[in-house]
Structure formats: C-alpha cells, structure tokens
Figure 1 (tube, rainbow, N blue to C red):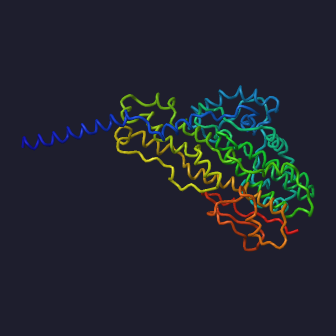
Figure 2: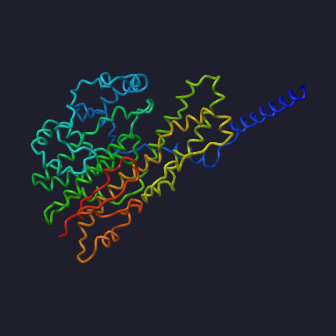
Figure 3: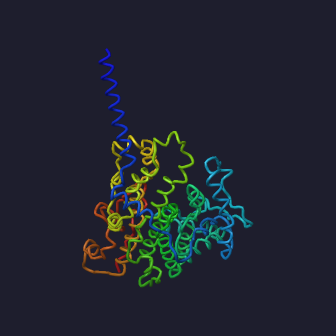
Length: 439
C-alpha cells in the first residue's frame, strides 16, 4: 500500500512538474515572428492626418446643429458621451437612451410610411414612381436632414475619437438618413431632371465611398456601405431608362474610378476592435491578482493579433482587392497546450471577443462588389459593341471591374440585368444590376 501511494505521489509530482514547466514556458517563451509582425501592423498609425472629419456631423445627425459650430459643440458634448458609453449604456432602456444635451432642436425621424428608399431597397426608382405624392411630402418634411446628409460631400473621412468607450457605434447607428439622398435623386429623375438626378446619385456614391476609406467606425463602414450599394443600384436603374445621348456629370466618373487598396483596407477597424477587446486599461483593473495565473493579457494579445492583422497584411489586402472570399475560420488562431495551461482564461477571451472577421470581410467585399458592378454597367453603356455578345463585352471590360468566379456572374432570365452571388451572409441586396439599353 505504501508502495502504491509512493507511485501515485510520484506521478502527481511529475504531473505538477510537467504542468509547472508548461506554465513557465507558456509565460516565458518569446513571441513568434508572425505575432511580432501582426502586433506591428496593429500598432501602425491609421488615423488620417489631413482633411475634414465627418464624425461630429454623423454624431449630431438627429439634431439641427449649425454646420459652422458642429465641431465646437461636439467637443463640449464628448465627455458626456464617453461617460454614458462607459457607465450607462449597458443599463439604459430605449426610453432613456443617450440624447445630446445641446441647445438645438431635434430633427423628425424618418419612418417607413414616408416611402423613402431604404438601404436594402434595390428598386428605389420604381418605389418613388409609385409613391410620388408621399415622397414629395416626406422630402419636404425632412429637408433639413437631407441637407445635412448632402453636406457630407464636404468631408474627407470618418474617425471616431470615442476610444475610451466600448464603441461609438451605439451613438451613430441611427445616423443613417433612411435613404433621403437616394429618394431625392430618384424623384428628380422621375420629374425629368436627369442632369440633377445623375449628379446627385453619383455624388452620394462618391461621398459614401470616400468616407468608408480608412474609417475606424464599423457602423459607417457597414451602413454607409449598404447605402452606397443601394445608390449604385439606383444609378444602374436610371442609366437603363435615361434618354439616348444623356450626358453624365464628372461626379459619375469619380464615383466609379478604379478600385485601389484603400477601398478594401479595413485595418483601422481591426485595430479598433483589437484594442477594445484586449485593452490593457480594460483588464488590468478588473482582473483580481488571484486570477492572474489564469490569464496573461500580453500573451492573449499575441495569440489574437494574427487574426486581427490578417486583413492588414499585403497578402490579405491583395485577396480583398481581387474579390476572393475568405473561408469562415480561415484566419482563426489555434492555441497550443502551453497556452491552455498558462493562459486558460485568455484563450476563452480571445475566442469570445474576436468578431467574426471572415464574415465581416466577406460582407464588406459584397459592398465593394457593388462598385465593380456599377462601373461595369457604366462601361457597357459607354462602350457599345454591335455584333458582340454580352459575354464578349464583359470579358473585355477592365480587370478591376471583374468579380471573383465564385460569384457566378450571369444574366437574369429576362435578360434585363446582371446577377451575382454574395460572399457574406445577409448580403442578398448585392444582386440584380439593370443592364443599359442597347443603343
């Protein structure tokens, strides 16, 4: 019996020795080359240094703050917004949601009965044509909000400086105008004001495209992108119905200029998410010393960094620019046994806190694909080729307009539009692009 106890004790001691060694190596081992590179990419400065920041304009989109005072008013309101995000947001009810405490009137909110073109409405032109009286009344009622949205054309980028709070998205998520700009352009077209209609819709596409570049605010990236996609659908519909010889403004050329890396670079979003999920300031105060053997923030950041930084690397950006889909879980980092022993809580945090990067990026590719398709429709209209099939004409378009083969570019059964398949979940709104009439 004593011998058995000695054997068991020896085995337990050996296990403890091995676990201790694994714990020590897990905590003491240096970062890998991949982790070092990823951390470097995530620490790279991303905020634009020139131009006008539209964040304050979006922040006050529901309030009629004078344009020349908006930055000053935002600077005064920012501490209150940070306090709400940090301490009050999780317990706030819809009746007690954040409202700016500024001496300016709130704007009426658009509602579904206004008949406006929502971000997922692919047939804005038809919707407006069928509800002209309702739309005219709605545009008159919301004319101040519409002017605020049009004023976004004077800004260069969107950058949230509410970095101390969990996210500013909760404060600007209602900033979308619910399609006022597109609805206004569609009504101009219905009224026969073709020059004004095309300039309006193309200026909106150009503006939304510019403001998405390099932003760290995910709501601007997603909602702004969906609005841009919807406006591009509207542009294609307008082009298919435009009178023969209708000239297009320079804004349309700018709206559908060739894609560059900046159109697909979402590194600032990944940096923002990484620093919020695994922030030293967030965890150093909340983690009791008795639990620190379960988690190493430094090693958690190392483990998570490659997944967050994958979209920042040259290889990742190249794939996004070529419209190649990202397989779900493809960039997931798999911890090893040493991580499990030395950083068990950190592994859980890394898996729970990391957003669904691949799905997010695939959905973003769908938004960028709308620019490719809008440019394709414009190119077909501007390059008639009698005697050539549509397949031949599509093959001849510039390379940057091409979509990945997995999208299965095809013609609809009625022959009136081009169809593509989405990469991301819930992106059915990328489908159906009206073909221009044969001249």
